[in-house]
Amino acid sequence: MPIRTLVWGENVHEQKNKVVAENYPKGMHNQIASLLSEDSNISVKTTTLQEPEHGCTEEALSNTDVLIWWGHAAHDKVDDVVVKRVMEHVWQGMGLIVLHSGHHSKVFKGLMGSPANLHWREAGERERLWVVNPGHPIAKGLPPYFELEYEEMYGEPFTVPEPLETVFVSWFQGGEVFRSGLTYRRGAGNIFYFRPGHETYPTYHDANVGQVLRNAVNWAYNGDRHAHLMKAPNTPVGEAIEKIEERGAKLSAADHAGEVKK
Image 1 (spheres, one colour):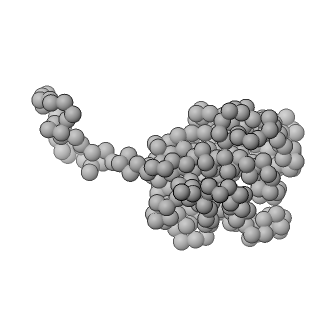
Image 2: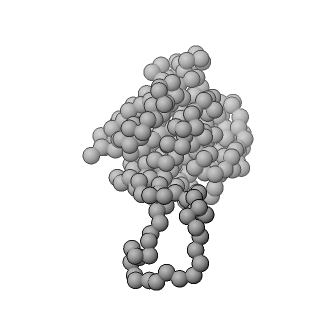
Image 3: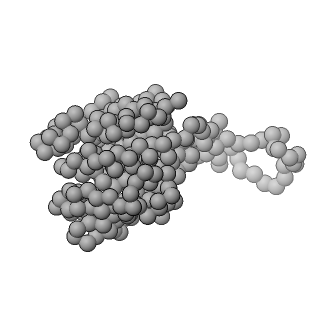
């Protein structure tokens, strides 16, 4: 069964900036989708900020195996109800791939529990991405390094938690370096952050970038959704795996009022 992938795009710069519109006449989200569609194992749909509930309804997310998130100028316009919904689906097992300025999205910062800050420069610099974990599935089919002639610089320190794995490290013409491909797991969900993708440059027309994204979708896929992880039920004494006797003092029902029930 193909991996059901939803590409979420902010779709703001394409409407306001001529250069972005020329780079991505059908929208960045649709260009990213076209890269993914080169893999017959991936079934791809797109949605944008402007759709009702930003296209991230309960039904849509329940039918999504991997969500790809690109945002930049309108992080604050994303409804908190939708953010919570996305995070809950990641905790249950939906894969998440966060691109470029999505590091400052409510979804990513919420899942990381950190500000996800960095320093940056928009100067059309060459970015050289080194594959520092060549055996990782996300690096499959890539050369030892590849270059993007024009990109925005992101520089360390990147205030995110220590990742499970670092797949790529970037070097920029100005001398900065950046951990540009990081994996995480939150609950049952696999998360990959991939740095390149500034909207005024044709990054999502690059063949190596497309290879990374297709690899990442296949890596992030989890065929199961573990809804029970969203609950914290009480297990009565009589249902314990081994026979036990209740003893000692216990809290009242009112003291447990803040806990999640069945």
